[in-house]
Picture 1 (spheres, rainbow, N blue to C red):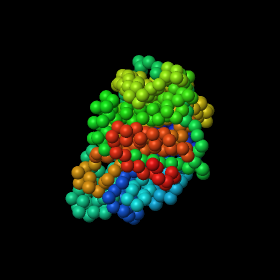
Picture 2 (picture 1 turned 120 degrees about the horizontal axis):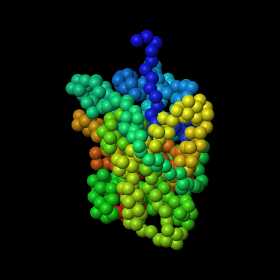
Picture 3 (picture 1 turned 60 degrees about the horizontal axis):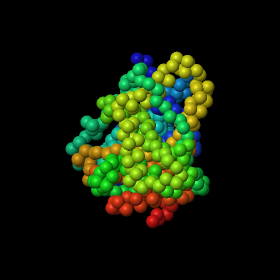
Picture 4 (picture 1 turned 90 degrees about the horizontal axis):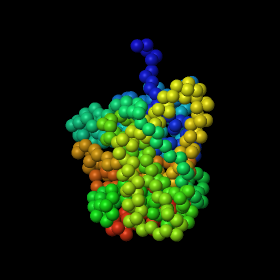
Length: 429
């Protein structure tokens, strides 16, 4: 093999759109945070990143522009520089900066922040990388751990870079695609491209018991319902059959197909609330059952397979593959805009993050959040660790009524919620 050869790989089916639409207002850069029990030491965090990155070929990549498609190529440069957080989160990661890497690592007090451009990996892929970075950092800051465990990757860590969309694609799948416009939340924006973050932390076990006993729904269905109910309370007269509230819910496909890829492998389904009329009254329990029925009918292996197989089939059309990238980008932007306006918001559940027993006493919490996108200036992300679930809202709006009402509904249902913000909103009550 020539000395100058660099490994390269195609973007997965979902990743193809992200370089096309990324800009300062829609960065497609998500964040996952690990909150430790001790103050972060910058030098040790940099050393940990320097040690971990070469072991992750799926993160040692840069984005390249081809004639027909974007693609990923081995980077090989020194790891990006770690620094203390000093600006709003989820800023655009530019290809010609950050040593050409598509992720950044920052810290603040006891918190390690990993921000990832979505073309590189989805939330599960990013979580795998952050968890190993935390392990390595803790081994450096606690030599007894390093002596006991060494510096290798943990057995649970996957380095698989399979394009699972192609691997599980089924040609006979029927077309499945919705594009009807949804109700879009509007309001006064924060100044200077502000980025509001509101964390609500609560007990997983208490929440699971309450949602099952009170409403017969899952945690995910309950939290999606609180968002829809709160939105309907504030904008009910503007919500209609022509403009329903529709919440995009990303579904991790790995459990359905046995995949362990660190690339993107998810699809979107939508929880839809269509009021019968402007005068019809709905209780929160009503909304819960509507959401449960909507999601349950869609989250089946067969239907999820239909959704991504339709997208893969479009990508595989010869004419589409042969069209030069600039023209392809124009079409993809139009398609994205149409699909983006079909949802009021996105509520994503990354799931429960587990760590090895030796590290548990040093890690308090994992939490994450996603940036704004076209038509969606308020979003929510759910992530849990041990018995703590964190529901995080990211918002470009001054008004915080919807997140407040979500937490008030939790309080009415007997769930204690501890709230933190990134300082944009001050103290929420």
